[in-house]
Image (cartoon, rainbow, N blue to C red):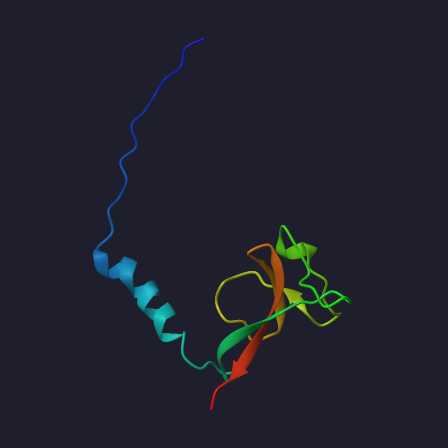
Length: 96
């Protein structure tokens, strides 16, 4: 059996085309159309008042309209995530 290896040349992109999406993303960190400018976290508590422990975000209890956080960027909806082995609810804050 004969195996043939080929070199692949990667095309280089100008710096401007790489920075444009990053700069656009930075511009979107401000208020959005949903008027959400940030968020704060609240601990998810067990019935005895202690923090609910977790390994991953999917372990956290949540209501029917509360989602699992998928990014570290402020969400427009309330979501839960596992942070330092404790479940927290991420609550969006309205722009003032």
